[in-house]
Length: 306
Image (cartoon, rainbow, N blue to C red; front, side, top):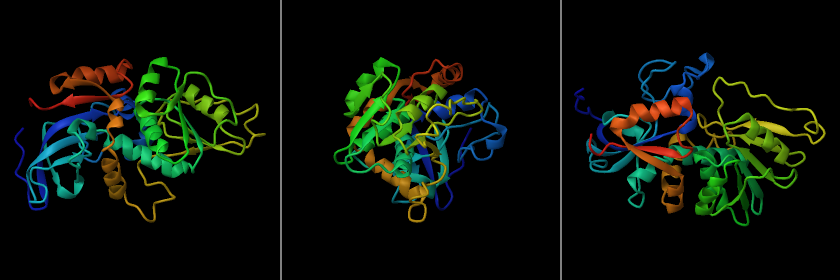
């Protein structure tokens, strides 16, 4: 398909890398987006309608080949599906700082989500922060929370191999269930009902669990008996589609994304990058997402030969 030349205010971008957001894109590939969410879950430049197949994706990094002078030749991040070249409004592009490698920049969406979750969870100086789920999102939250002075950050995951990821991120790790009342802030990013139940048991009395996972059309059974009421626990959603309520009057989604891209100057985030494949293998990678065999970290697609 031949793309039209960019009009005034638009830019033509040659894709370098795209990343797969394992949680959301696996639900899309399985056709598991609930009918009630078909409109809200549309990616900015999605083609087609749910359920699958649709042209979906929102972690794209490329180089501007034609467009406004201030963008010419710059590496940019865009919320665009997996495609070798595209033309979009220049306002839809976020410039990647020179110190951020193009492949790492596909993590901008994960870091943006982590920023929003922490705005919702509001950890303070010296807090003990427990994050259940050591995947791409959980790891991104942990690395950012680590920067809070005096914070003690622990990733919890049943997969012992995630310890290496936690070590690279400079945070603690346990495969055992943390004791209740041992944390000040608890965040769930496991994508599993079992993980959410673990997070509830780890929450402090009078505390809450901030839920970062999106479960699609899967029911999530929880045990809300036992001490759920006596400890007066709460469950609160955090979702990247809107800026956290604590910042919404002062920050836009563009502000949040620009912050995320700047934060990617930290090389420790490379620990969240998983395997890489040629664009020619994208159908196989999507199939792995659908059948649940994809790796837990950010799988990247190399478009250099496209």
